[in-house]
Length: 561
Ligand code: DON
Image (tube, rainbow, N blue to C red):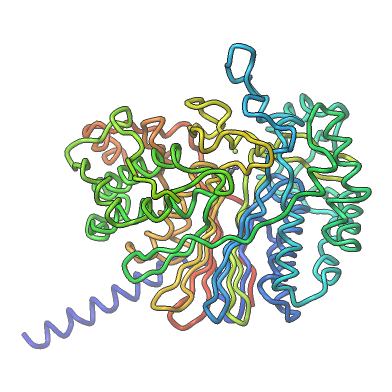
């Protein structure tokens, strides 16, 4: 008897080991790592870290390298957010989000009878918000940079001159958007050529712009030759961004959103990004439920997560906007009491219909593209940064002379209450257009501590699905005990209050589960979401090495040493 128990014990250990052997793990590195949407950008960032640069130097290099290697979303003509945690535990965040031009007006995308004019906020020069990326990088460099900017930018400029090899995924993307490049630009642009996998695209015009930035700093973009060229280019295409808009742009340091979930401390982006608040609300609503017992992507887990998402997105659409323009009851929204109150109407028996659900009541105390990258340096400093042009190649408007695409971030405003934007998101007064206001974002760059130590850094593109993709990746590691790579690769689903449906990645969930959800009364949609998010993250393993999770849905790659 004794022996048989002993053998069963051995067998279980063997199974466990085998289980481990079968697990898919991402790149493991001992000292430092960069995970981003393109190998060229990850490599440039990692080389800066090897040279002795810190996480912020590497971030600046990676961000600019993505502008060269990943014009789909990497940018000079867009904006983003970054959350950091230094090795001494200091945390902070920067907002380099685009803002509405001074000449913007509340109803600028409506016709004379108040209807939203299709494509006006998504295609061409009027869709462009004042870009923030270059200002963001220089604000970060001023505060934290350790290497000179020309050292950081040199490999990026070399890459732009040398060119970047087209991948299969890039070939497909360029092809898909060529009709819109033609429609938007007066002249034919570089991306109209029939690029094929393994071709090399060179970016000499972008290299020249980067050289000016390297030489003159922030002013190399927001003033002088670049600013003159850029504003007259935008205006000659019918836009309203002036030299004054560019000269006035400033990145803003913000306090991140911080909350606890079990033994994790989660640090995420604050408004004008909705990511941190929504993530906190959803996780606080989920926390009382033993979802690890229900199982990953099980009926009960999906029900709890969906209902929490539904409630958080209903609040998002009402309460959130640029904190410099509207008052946001952040404390109340992310409190445990409010989460409990919001989930009172939840039942495992049937869905809460979105048509029966509104934003919660809070007593105000008076008073299709983005890209994410995660970096940890050899000193243990970490950043999570998400940057975007909004749609794929932004407004599709490409400034040939300067060599980059311009964003269509103005579509992230609510053009009209009740009218969905390109991600189907609704907004209200809090996110209406006003001169110099920042449009609400879903970006969710996030860093996590466990028992006081750095544990994870992650984020993703995906418009409205950003928040729920970050959420599921955290839960996959923390609740369902996956490796970082497994957590990133696992099939995802998404609910955003309206439309009232669970979007699910196609062919990733079994039929029985879908039937069970449908039987309960949930609408499921596997058609309109070929992929949900493209998460890049780094997990600190127990032995203090790093595991990268680079999303298989893109060309994303981890590089480390
Ligand atoms: O800030 C936002 O929420 C959007 N502009 C993000 C767009 C995006 O993620 C597109 N990528 N798929």
